[in-house]
Image (cartoon, rainbow, N blue to C red):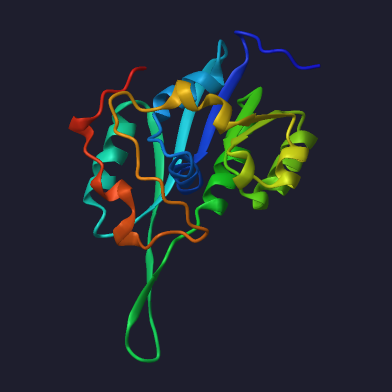
Amino acid sequence: MYQHSPLDRVAVFIDGENIHYSAKHMNMRMDYLKLCRRLAGDRRLVRSYFYTAISNQSEGKIDFINFLKLNGFTVVTKEVRNFSEMDTSTRSVRSSLDMEMAIDVLDMSEHLDSIVLCTGDGDFQPLVAALARRGKHVEVCGLREMTSTDLIAAADEYVDLAVLKDELVLAGAPPLPREIKNELPANDQDDFNTFKVQDTSFDF
């Protein structure tokens, strides 16, 4: 049975869109610095990765990304793609960074003892299986109702975000309006775009 050791090397990989909307579902604003500290525990946190899509209207989100970079995160971004429809109207489609995240995890795995995936996306189940074959300890952290059962079953350890909610809430942030939707909101409704670094008080 695996036991945490201060000598263990661990990295945290955050599926930004998935965890962001999980936080919205819980009516909270997430402190990602606290999240990484909590998941690493007494182990050696080698690196924290954050993956997210951006658009040319994401000024507030860019401030948020810069804040993460200044606090030691490796941030991987991809631009939202625009497609022209037959009627000449344009629609935006969120860009997936699943491939980038999976490649980074595999590249880093040889330097790690434990890997924490912050996502509920079942598409990462084969990645977890591949890491297990390499003898790596894999933990998954996500909101239970938004996390694939297959992903949970494949992981060595699962952490429900809801259990950590009180520990991870952003200090001084007002609660979000309670509005739960099954579909992702449009880009211009993404409250990442209103994020102001100067309005936050992270405690790390």
